[in-house]
Image (cartoon, rainbow, N blue to C red):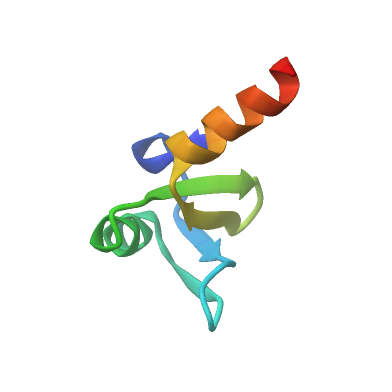
Length: 68
């Protein structure tokens, strides 16, 4: 998964917003930062599919699951 400035594409779809938002990475980063969260690419494509989430919290939860 690529996170925040690691996302190198022109267009993204943010699928966990209502309604689904199609925008640039720059705009997606702004939306995520306004909420104090991260922009995370969950599927590569044209446009890439992204979610706005707390990446550190999600990443550490995944580590806990695999280590138990």
